[in-house]
Image 1: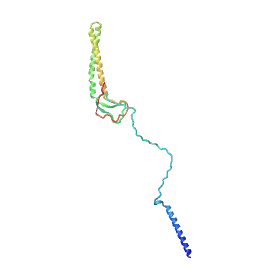
Image 2: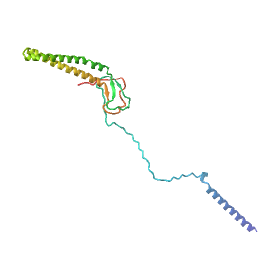
Image 3: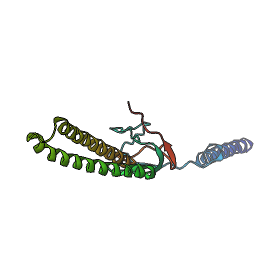
Image 4: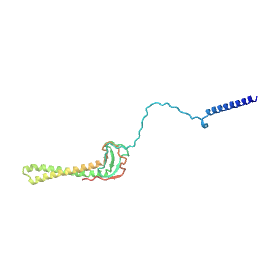
Length: 201
């Protein structure tokens, strides 16, 4: 009896040890290492597709044509455009104060009218003396003087007309126009700027 009791007790202990070991392994397998939950894993299906390519560069642009605009007469200049605004060819960009040029343009007109009157008078005198000279009723000197007076009067008329045209041209130059359709540079002349007239050679 004693031998059987000892054998039964040893078998019971061995069975209990194996059961505890199996239970411990199952608990160990049911929990991750360190007692942390397993992380979630996202699954994405890879498919080929077209993606637009975007490139960024640092560069500098320049106009295809650059035109420098200068005033042809001097005076107080005022701008007639805002910075960055476009201008069509022929549109006004700047205006030089036209008041002194208007006065200058009106001055040669009376002298031109006087020269025209002198020329008309010289032509009449020359026309009267010509038949008298041909009939030998007037001297050579008188006829030469009349012809010379007419020629001088013609020269004075041309000079007076040139003066009128010059003053009118300067008056027109007070309006500085855009030579081509373009955008003025950002450093356009501010208002009330005095510009000097170019020197004539």
